[in-house]
Length: 51
Length: 482
Image 1 (cartoon, chains in turn green, yellow):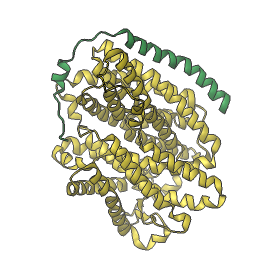
Image 2: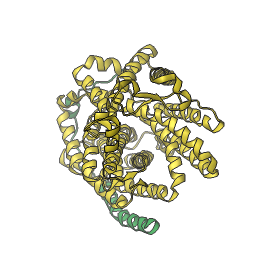
Image 3: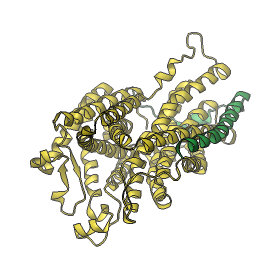
Image 4: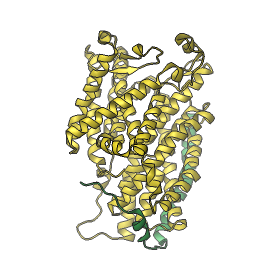
């Protein structure tokens, strides 16, 4: 396969404007929400198992 | 980094090369010393005494002969791998030879007593009144800087050497060898090893869920990137650099050049992190060595740079602790960084599958016959992890099975470890060689680089530190003395 040297400026300039879709907002929200909940669960589990 | 993206095949090659070295090292169990010729430098003041074979059985070889033999052995080992990658063999052999000898020279320089020794007793032994106290691992950083110099000041030379500059292949071989060493440590300290694994798993779950969502949001909302760019960028910055960017780009069916461009940035910034973060960790976290080690795994992108950063951090913190009179057992910090990084690698496939599911169901439904398959998780699974798990479990189970095997196993891993260090060294040199910082001045890259700088230095590094602190504070490597 030949080496690829794309023109970054041109590619970024061509980038379409895409507003955040509800599904993307949901993904971000769920990821952060799950992270927050699991933080407490994992801290508790670590303490319970290894303290 | 703009070479073809050959991650999967490099993974399997790493498994083969790593396992060959591992199996040969286990010859000690049958009384065969097959790798004892391997040459590693130690602290020196007289260059003639700098290099020695790993095993006393090969002492008659002397330093020069064992080094030449080590070079030839590694070259012979790498040539079939290069052939499997489909590269030009004579060119690979020539490039690899130059990289090997330059990197090894850096390693010898890093072991110069005025650079490396860390304790008053060692200074007395070498008759030096001072030392930079950077440890022998400073040779890795010298190799990185020499590679960086060549990449940016001598671009033609760098271009000629790139055929053999494969940091991801080298570090994966090193990680597979490291699995055996960690197996012995785990057998000796089962409680600590299981604690490190659990805490490492917990830390990466947190980092994944927080990092990716925030970087994606920042790239999309603040910097106006399209989904095709934002998803690989978020994975590259937040998760595990090149492999994550590639896996994500494939999962959402982004054009290959998106992954190539993101990967170029990842390599440059990983090199910057590698030069800064270990010293920050040594300055501020020397009393929390495992926090520092986990932080390197969570903050430094790409396997090569992260594990390399773990090695430098360990050497700096161990040296600092030794100067205080506390001698920690070597290998636990590096093991922690590696464990965290391997967990991250394993989850890349799962995360890519989740993204692929969301994209195919809600954003860009795939055409008929191109539906999402659960098998895609396996396709994106980093296969070198299998090699790491195999070497870890073999040594762990052997060590647990009989006390009498501990001595030959330790001897085996000591010899294998020389090759692990050599592949580390090659990784550092190659990272430098592929870090063409002039790309940052390329037209249009500013916006990409801005997202990277804002996210990496704005919160990825600090969230990584916080998560590492939460799960690893108060955990220490075993103390040998002090």
